[in-house]
Image 1: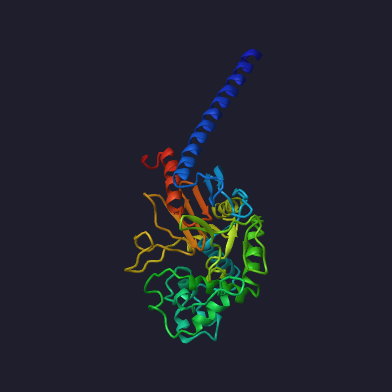
Image 2: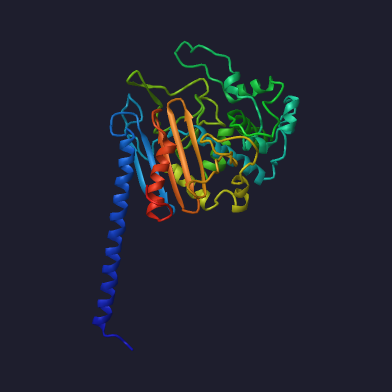
Length: 383
């Protein structure tokens, strides 16, 4: 039966109206959700446009549903923080260091069961028992380089005397033993991730920051992201770290441990981290099977993560679930910066909070924000 033209036109018009109405409902719901997120952030202390602040991103099924900057990048320029502002990621760097190692394994140039002495023949005897896998999942037992560093006064310009990755290597090669038998316990180790960066450099025959750019940042079009080395690289749209001291904000951007790369030296923005999230979700750099190695938690007895739960760590990611939701996440803390990323894999939800001030808890904020979206999806009860 052929409908008259007026009936066909009416049907098309009705479908168009329904589509417009549904779009309106969706946009209104998104706007209401964004208002709730904004309220959470302002209640946490991000009300002022003229103080150090944060940048916050929410991705839902790969789409940006919230992206906003709060406050300024530094107290001198008073530039507004936004999606292109590059914050020091601190320990969020570890997921990129782990990916660099995994790419070398993919290339057939490295194996997870190789030992430190396989890579560095002159490393002390205790390195024979430490494998690449131990370094990746924090079960190496290496001494903490922060505790081994000699205390130094600032240089003539007032800048802190900073240790480099090579200096960490020297400190570790001067040791005779590990804190515990490698593989027997879990203990978060910045030393291990500094060594992983040096391993990438040794095996690839390329400076670690160059390898990161060539194999990760450039292929993903993360144009503003950089593994920062003072005097050798620049950070565009840079945020500087700040701390509240005696009631006043002070720039506290660098410490003696702020110059190492493998454990925390990358700067990036919401714009670029959205591309990173896309690459992880769609397995752009490595296959799903290869990534499962990184997302398999280490199981060792008698240890706990920072939140007090049993250690579940993979390669550069904490893996313990949240309210029954499959999650991979990490936090970062360094002089003047606090950062967090929470990725809920089955829910296709990612929340990223980058702060250039130390009075905020970005992990807690990210989870408060995640609760809103998980509740609206009906996967958890509203708080």
